Length: 264
Length: 232
Image (tube, rainbow over all chains, first blue to last red; front, side, top):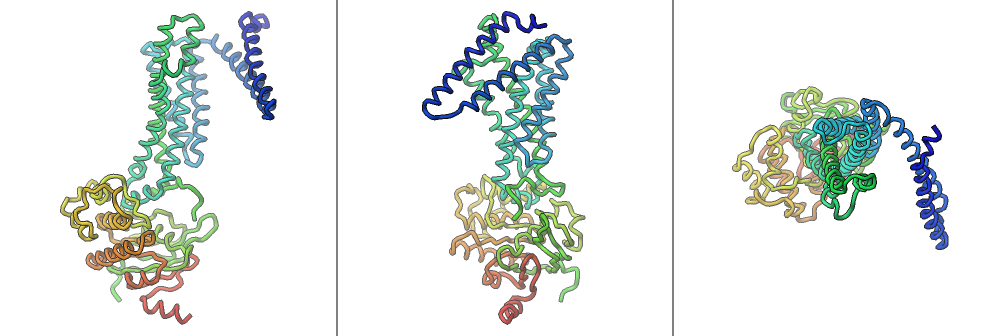
């Protein structure tokens, strides 16, 4: 086992990690000469980051040797964790976790399932889990942005929302403008990523594929495939969660409960 | 005294307590068809909070109220809010045109307000020909008159006006006040007007309710209430 753990690749990686960490420590020492003290934070962050990613890599190495179906519980766990993380953005909205969970499970689940069936994602666990995790992580960010934006929009327009209610509007009508703007705002990063692809940045997936020997053109095309899937899954997630969350902004008697502060 | 069927709105020990603090307590009043009731009192007396209970923007925590002899809990919130319209301190117009704002209420029930009715409402509030104007080009006074017409367009049984002129300059205040008085009288509307200004209440209302600490301190015809206050 130790032989496997300390293979030539791992030893080479450890050497590279030490070199990269050395660069970070050098910057830390440079800052120290300017009387900027970040030694503690930098050291803790470096050690913690290294241990976390090595542990995750080790767990993945074990899991990726398992049968294909094990990707389902792995991805399901990621979806729940992602829903809990992004729901924190909408703490004051009751039901934020449930809306996030439904959004992420349906948004990423449908995209991953469909793309796997259509051959855009290799069903092998070693491909499905990393690609799936990318989709889930991006859906989490998009969902968090959408909920945060929805909360701030509604809280900034309480008067308009209540005016609409006071005229007999349904709660979903009273906040529909803010659902739309939250949805649009949440998709800005995904749209910008697609727009600037290859011009402003060469994403990690493509870089990794090229480094591991894939033809650069195929790596480039597959990077586009991934970003398009990210857009689809994030868009569907955000669409579902903003639709669901708008109902939770109101009481059963259709009163706005998502208000900026305690009642005056 | 009119007979009981003329009572449009009746509150029975209505109250609201939030986090242990009573905002409105045991308010019992009757408002008859065509009555204009001014609600006055110092800041924090619970005037606006009392109005918000009557179209259920906030939930009463004690007592009840009856609209046209029906307990509010027997009426769906949307239907109640259509029947108990509200104009707030700020106009809060929706982006779009004046006509779109006027039509908003009826649109919610799938009813299309005819162009003629929109024009008539705008004429009543002194904004003849404003139907196609974008709301972001209106002055504060014009916007508040559109908000008033928007509430009237819903044909409410009771109209709640929450300090409708307090955010306006003196000239606009006078214009809006005139519009409210004329339309309310002409349409025989039943109104509850919150104001911190007793002179405004005296000009617009038939009766006054004085709230203090969330409780009804006095209620009655304007002169009577003012006399009682002057001698106490």
